[in-house]
Length: 138
Image (cartoon, rainbow, N blue to C red; front, side, top):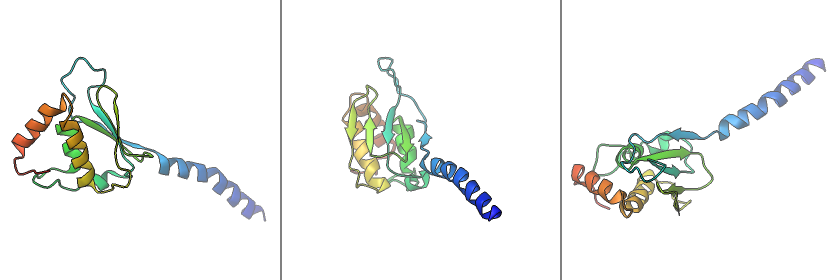
């Protein structure tokens, strides 16, 4: 009975640590910052329901780069994984809700790139990206 009680206590003490580790978010910093001195944030922030970076390691069609690399490098985007919803925050703090049912890395990346391409600073980032990767089509 004593061993059972000790084991039960140990499980009760360790279980919350396991749950916390499972719910911890991962942050993938932007690989480049924007050139704007006007905005406080020099990168955009993307919240994703996706749980691991592996989910974003798909090569984006028309390039030899992964989806996460394209977002982080070409579009100055910091990615936060394991969030409650898919949301993009622009450099000025504007919030753009994305489809939470969308789990495809290519589809999410396409949506985010199109959104950013329509933004003031994003337009030049889109042009640069397409000049470097002319095979990409949306």
